Length: 119
Image 1 (cartoon, rainbow, N blue to C red):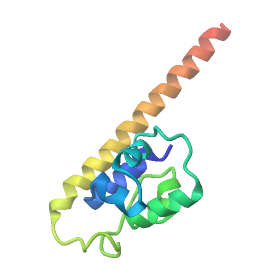
Image 2 (cartoon, rainbow, N blue to C red):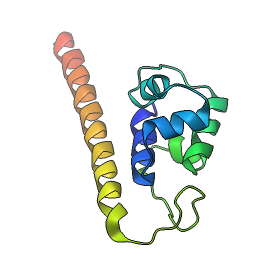
Image 3 (cartoon, rainbow, N blue to C red):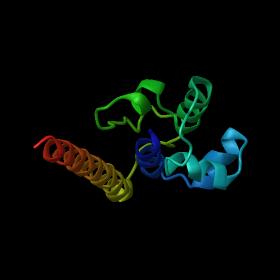
Image 4 (cartoon, helix red, strand yellow):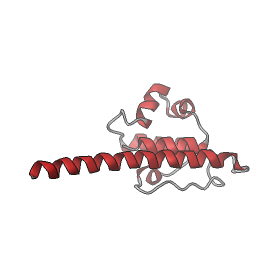
């Protein structure tokens, strides 16, 4: 459900799955399941832990709007000193947009099938 957003934030922070998993006290495989939406339900406590590990607010993960992060104030960013992170941020946002496009296409297909079945 929130997997692509969590993955985008992690990538923009320059963190590896294993690093975040370690902060959460879980295996990298379990954390990967979260990012790949293989885990259907994330309770509020886990979302809070993930947000803390990534240095964002829970609302940043749960929001429908794209992520915007201030690297200067992030406890995990070590400052935003060069433009080396720019391509990672752009790649993470493009990944997030790709996932949204796929979700919208799937919804469109479902709507089309429903409309066709009523004809």
